Image (tube, rainbow, N blue to C red):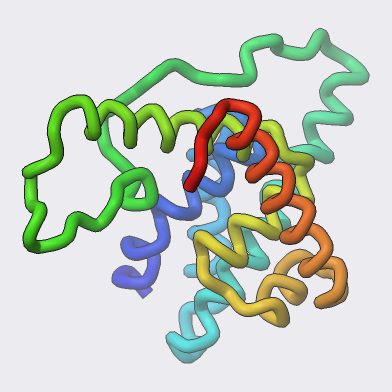
Length: 182
């Protein structure tokens, strides 16, 4: 269980951060999801843990939004949704796997260009509607198949395909508008 949680913590944080757009809330959501998994499903086979965890994480994100909706009826909403640039620890999803023949041989200009590209893609992901972002992250970042993503999202496989298609088209359009060709 500990190995599994260590393996997914950064990706889970990134998913929660994209969803709630607040670092401290994202950390709380991931921590709650990990605790729920450990408390209720510690005896389950390790093969079942990824789907269970993703479902728990998505439910925790939904719970967060429900609580926010109730709180906003009684309080003024906080305007600072995005946090600053903290570079304490990097997410492996933010870096490219370097080929063995080009290790550290990238010119500074190329490194800067890649960093800017990843920052732009991350910003474009934040601008996607919630369900499209959720489907895109589950399918392409978490590398889940359509059935797994549908089970986690609580919708049909066709809906996952539709959300993924719309997300990829929106991201491609945003990249093209910036003159970026992949």
